Image (cartoon, rainbow, N blue to C red; front, side):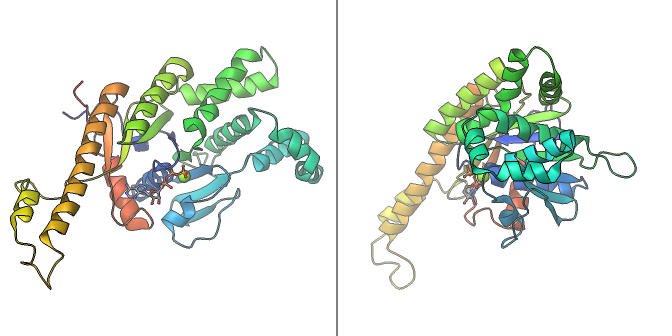
Length: 327
Ligand SMILES: Nc1ncnc2c1ncn2[C@@H]1O[C@H](COP(=O)(O)OP(=O)(O)OP(=O)(O)O)[C@@H](O)[C@H]1O
Ligand SMILES: [Mg+2]
């Protein structure tokens, strides 16, 4: 069964790609940004975290884009949101003393103090994302049709998403509350924002994804209408060849000599791929059932995800109608 109810990913203004480490967040963010840019959208993809991986996926060998960002492809700008850069920009705008602020931000003691302070990184990062969404071009149109955020892996990115709610509930009045309320309203607006969880079809990631989605629904309130299950191993042979292993196992070990590895070796390889495929299939269904969300399945690509061709392939699978898993 498929569902057409979830509107297209490209219609949102902000898509936050989130998930545990190594699930494929950066690949999914890059694939989504590439697909949207090819469909004529002006896209900004913002990588949150200490490292830059995304430009190198889209343009192997690309120089870092940094906080200033750079247009990597027509209609696709990439940047890395560093919280200290964002804080400097914010303070300079508020106080109008850029050089002095930059000096303070570089100070080691100040950094130690800030590094020990919770919450500000997330708040300033989301403030920057909000600000980027407010930017206009010369004709008054939004500078970006779509902003894709590649969220940090820590705790599934939950801290990043939860800080505005915590601040709004703790701070009763004043500019911090006003500013944070705007950010929170942006995050909770279903016409504007979508949280896109990325999971792997394995036991632990499946369980963690179900817990993450439950928390998002119960506490955080950011719209989520589908879950991406990445790197699903396709069937190792076409339909109708299900007994391939048995057939290979029946062949004499010398019959392929000089042409291919021994049939027993081929049978073991096929068995391994089939087991992986079956395990993945089981957890795709489980993730769909436990999150009660339609699933978008992305294939495991033997080539990896670096370069435009594999990303385009992932991008096409990403915009397919999500599949509703029967409970
Ligand atoms: N569908 C896929 N098929 C094959 N390889 C994949 C797939 N998706 C991701 N990978 C590979 O898995 C690795 C991790 O992917 P990626 O960097 O996108 O994950 P991430 O969640 O952003 O990781 P991190 O938490 O470290 O930021 C990369 O080498 C990537 O090329
Ligand atoms: Mg990443």
